Image (cartoon, rainbow, N blue to C red; front, side, top):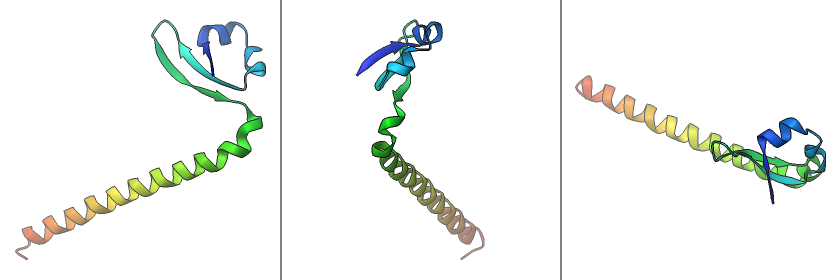
Length: 81
């Protein structure tokens, strides 16, 4: 995988046309801003991204349910149950 600086992409946007997969970094801040994946790989990657999104949403819902269950238990204790 190639690494591209954000400044390089801003000064020469045509770099994106030649990219298949690349890491985009801010060389001054020494941080990774993200990754670029060409649209021709979308059919391979989209199902994986969708699966990860579903799993993250389910985990958030489970945590919210656990939190709500604990709140109801606390309310029951406050009511003398």
